Length: 89
Image (cartoon, rainbow, N blue to C red; front, side, top):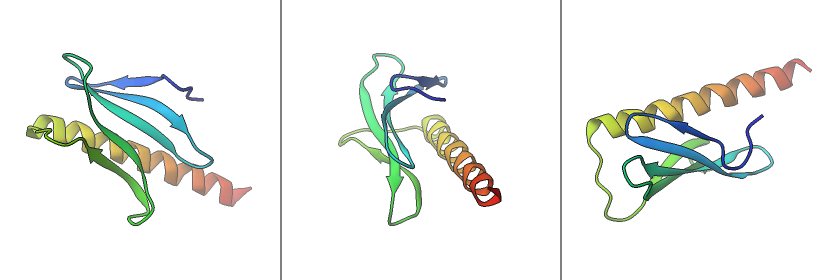
């Protein structure tokens, strides 16, 4: 079980759990060099999935974009698994 403050590190970014909601979580995304907050990952009801919300004036190369996409993919996969298990109960 994840706790507030838990994080996942990639080569360029840190994804830090900052809020646990009833069904979803919120993550701050930090630049690994100086731990500056560059955005947030949270559930977007309009898309029915986790999305990345960048801070203003942030720029990303393809490696950072890939890391963000990979993190979103893993969250979505975990959400689907959790929902499938609930349907079995």
